[in-house]
Image 1 (cartoon, rainbow, N blue to C red):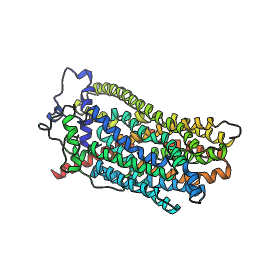
Image 2: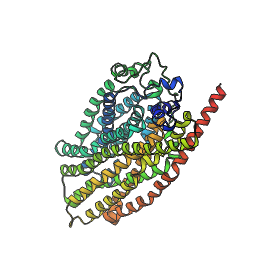
Image 3: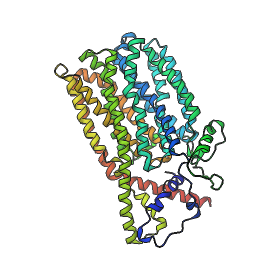
Image 4: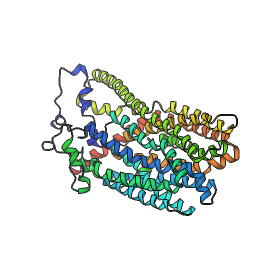
Length: 531
């Protein structure tokens, strides 16, 4: 978190955490703190509009991926290639879904959210037009990679916007809504794709995406304000560029949040250079690597189960394209329900842990007679973020393992088990998989608030690379050892990855605080040298 963010986000903490024993001796705060501007000038109504826009933008990543699944067998037949080769288009999509945000995330952290959104949607729109006209397998693979380059980055950019406009205390709920928007296509995408492919042909799927993205891009340009702090501070600073200025000044005039740009000097965050390798560096940091590795494993197994659903349900239960699309509803509904509930739980957990921590810290402060002026900063540094955010991860992990086990072995004995059983298992898998993503993404945005898009890109890179590898060999593995044994192997890997969660829980807080203090020392050295 940047120094300016650190001060703004904790303005209320100064008064809330003041020890009661010292209330008779009020502390005179510096003038800058007394006139503290709001963390963001956007009121709740405006935040709702912004979250709605970025959540809708995030649907394109899911639509481009999931709307395609029911048509995989038909595409293989039309292009005269095997199902395994068509499944490789899913793999290639996932590879670029992982790589692309590593470019667009840092761009959005420097050049602005609106510029990044515009570029990604132009790429996506062009790829969809090309895919609607493709006639051979090679073109299909190349354009799916290009389509992924455009659509996948909406997640990283959207996470950056959420980080821009929210504080830690409210971020969990907003991230839950954002994740729900991201996962609507998981529920309805395959249904739409199956219906379109069954009635108009699979190429019509991409014409649908072309129209959808073109119309939405117009609304995004007209309604989404720039939120990047290095360009607009807390939203009260009007940038010089015309594209970044609109529609921010409308938000400034209509907000109900109290702010006074004439009396307060809005300080911009430090401008950064585009750091393409930033997400890779986050992946290598010990305070983030264990939990990212863990999520990547679980995400890969989830994607492996989704990828083989179409072929398995067609071969084992004889379903049509439209029927296959309907089987994906349970997975999508589970995903949406899980993330909405998890977002509320995240906020409640954060407030509960924060209240307990403030009570204990106040008692320690009274005992040790610590300087009240420095109290809030010290408390902030020692806050148990891992406890506040990651408490439910082992529970979700266990439930996902059980649901994957149920999915694999019920399809393995498809002649003896009704199709409703594996479909219900996909509901549980979607709910738990997405809940873990919501928890861990919120945690990373908290830790890397000044590089929130890059942090999201690093998580996306790892999970997509793992998923790309998993989807490339899941069908051959199923054909070799069977559905049940194949997913039993996957569960064994998931159980082993729980070690990473234990490492994160035990050591990440210490590593994170050491890194934050080192940054503070470096900043102080730079200020002393410049002075």
